[in-house]
Length: 485
Ligand code: TXE
Image (cartoon, rainbow, N blue to C red; front, top):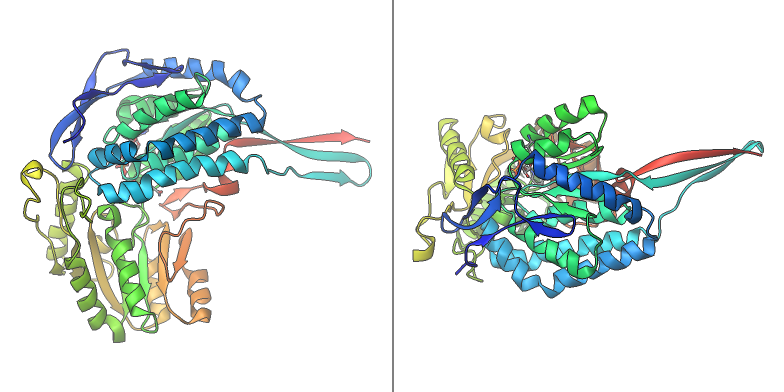
């Protein structure tokens, strides 16, 4: 059974404290539809306290030798790994994802985020130029100051630490706001940071809603750098707030990712890979390949085998270690998924699998938010279901006749986050990868993540890149110093 009703606290100036207004929101467990903890319903007063702490802490933290910052961040990674089971269980209860996924992906990646950036800062290089014998130019990279970090509910600790780790590694201090739908692992991270010896005020976590806390962070004059991950609609609001204040902003937004299977692909691998990219985390990953395109000669067999394999995915109680598909994160998100499946029917689609609420996994989950893996065929290629982000376990499969045609389909979308291409023709892989308008192209794979590479989207999938050197560049300010000879 989930942990007893916990009252989550804000983490400000090294202390776990109540919100100034003493207001709380119910934190619902998706698998049961029932509140299991309370999350602070904070507001701008709490953000103000956090900013004061972060400004104070910045003086020392920004002057700490990189080796000292690195040691503390590595200790945080060690403690996340020590507490893996506790964090994985909390993530599964909070988000509805299978416990096996939280154990195998979310929490290990949170530790590797800290480990990666804790060591990356020990090997940075700065440029220098001798100018025509008359001057010496060098670039000084300095921390930006107090940064605002806002993250979504789908990969809660993974995506929050993806921001916290580089921000702190570079010498900034931070105010982080996790999604109000999944606050628990961010709350548990705070004690870990204290135990690791992170000085007070370096990391502050303020819980609450987007309009009350997120907006207060993006609008605060002392927070000049914002790293946001979430939906495109919200990303637009963040950009509108930050633009007139000339803030530095990174937006990681939504996706409607093409997954292209050529007839010459290894079909076994393509089906297994497409199953993961369609339904991992109940399809609630911005990188999911929700638009599957299959070359016509391979289409009938692919659809049969894919539907067959998807029908075997076990929808169940997230805490059951044999579960492969857990609960959808909220009632609102479940309604959104149902809306798009109904729309697919109206747009002429054929429901080849799923499409309606599954039987209840067990008594505990009687009122939970469950939806089965759903496969839709025969949709017009440019209908709404094929253009708009659903962010659930729903994919459409469409045949194509030529490379040129499928590249046109793939690019005819407002998003440009990621894509997969399945082919054994190397020249075609290079050719297609060059022409697809997405920030990441996976060939014969999906979600292989190397933290050294730039990560982010084009078009309405976002602005800027995070990961690797791009993250270190984002969280620092380059200053050019020119010394005359
Ligand atoms: O986003 P929301 P969600 C996308 C994913 C989907 C969405 C799901 O594709 O579209 O995010 O996440 C806070 N000012 N990505 O529903 O609602 C809110 O409280 C400031 C893409 O959570 O945008 C939450 O903490 N903040 C991504 C956060 O913003 C505000 C990976 C996100 O909430 C706010 C993951 C406001 N006005 C999901 N309103 C990628 N590309 O990597 C809300 N928030």
